[in-house]
Length: 185
Length: 365
Image (cartoon, rainbow over the protein chains, first blue to last red):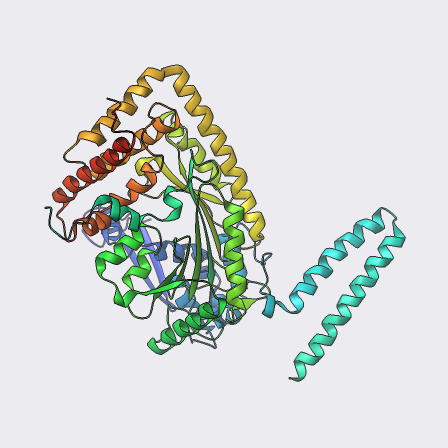
């Protein structure tokens, strides 16, 4: 194997190889340790480059290696928010959404990012807004009741289990009715 | 220096002290304050990241209308109407963020009379509800913040998603939009070199500890802020409960560190406290770092009963009032760094004198 020389100084063998792919365009940089350190320091001293948002954006970029090896993932960069026209790529870069609609537009892309930021969690378990909460309150109640039902059956408390089952049916019907009304409007 | 613009220190402090600074809350010998913050957005407008001037204005109007409907006695301060120094003072009092102070277009803050509630408009999110309470009062502060949240929601359409929860500009806040933080004074754990062990341990619970005064990793005045990092996947109650659990343990460890210090080197500790007290009472030039160290020592001396005639709020108050914005506000104009150090020394001397003279004019030294 022929030793590649540093692009910068042409004196020392290249020890650091940077591959960068932006919009499908590939650029390569080969530097020796000394020149690479200089470059690195220049980057570190640039306050604007080393901001919280860049750190966050780095964290959001789930796996740059995977992106290179799986070109079919490229289609995700074209996802664009229907509300504010922010692209998913732009979101990754600045680490902030443009509008509430972004969450809907990027719904499929978000779970791995949220997992990373929130210790593996992707689903809200907290407060629901009173007015907009609507059927979500009931859905949560149903899932609570379901787990109650399961443990009651395991304990062979069938009488109580039947009561819980009726409650679940009642709530499911309520949700169904509300949905029907909502769809028509 | 003593021009007509300079008001008396007592009057200045009376106007500047927020209730959380000088009231004693639960566990106030270690916990200085508790803060709850909720991030909320309107479902029709773009986030401040990209919104247009008109949208910013519309959002501000929608918030304004909703706040008025709630009947909460909050008063609005518009960023564009404030001077640079005035904004800096609000930042130093933790009532607004540095981000909000930078922005002038249509951002504002709504404040309650005793400053325990502040509502930032068009910062990173459309609304940030903040409650600041003295001592350790996580449940109380959360309850108050959620009350305000409920009241606002009646007149304001929140951006909410069944799966993701409350939608926020930054994905680090999505879900509950809740940041619960507790400000702690931990000289015992610092003197016994235990913080290096505790900070990484806290991280394992989805919490983070950082110094809030000073830059980088140093924590001026041995003051740390412990807060939750994850906002998604746990209820508000669970988040604050987990934080409370860790804070309780830190309180217990700080207490035993203090006891151990008194037992093993009581006279050295007392000496350190009184040297710092001497520095604060008699210095003519005081840098912020030295002031913070001495204030922490004196506060510890008060907690341990070495010093009796100085109020406990001294650390809370003076950590805030000896920052550049406040010093210049008090002086009535711009001060160069050296002038600030002189000003800082004289403000602290005067403040301590107030306590000593209240104590029948007697002196302990």
